[in-house]
Image 1: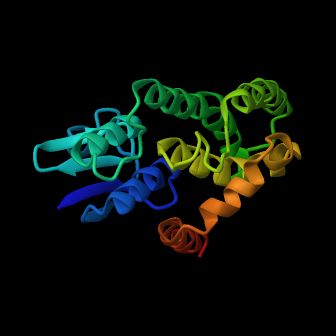
Image 2: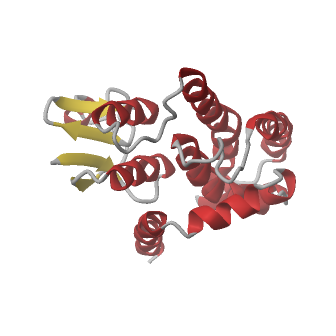
Length: 213
């Protein structure tokens, strides 16, 4: 049985957790925060989450875990078979991470963890977000899924980026990504109906309540 290290509030953890569920793997969740302790650094060299431990050893970095699970379970594909289409899913996933996730992440300290408001940071994020949203609108398909007719890893990356990041942009910047990315709201409604997404979200919401309580 695999061991998934991390905690259910992390969007990257939830991307991997959803992948494991969609592919039908049995796994144990090991609740872990990012750590610089030697024992954990031996599993995840930068101390990040998630980390997936399999019989051969540990694997870190979400996109690497995606690729490993795809190689291990090609019968439940989350990448297209065609090499070009597969590359386009990877391009979209990386663009979501670089130009949306890492941009909106800069707001999380202020929005969720009590850091002081920073108008200069807001201005910087607004500028970066303008470029990122424009870029993503050129490659998102929403027909009905992010990269086309079938669900892929790009959907997992986008879903757990937007559901967290959009809370931050609304609160800090007054920007709703659903107003700026045509098709996003309808796609979110489709993803929200997925029973496995609902399971991951229920675990996330329970963890959020525990943190707040």
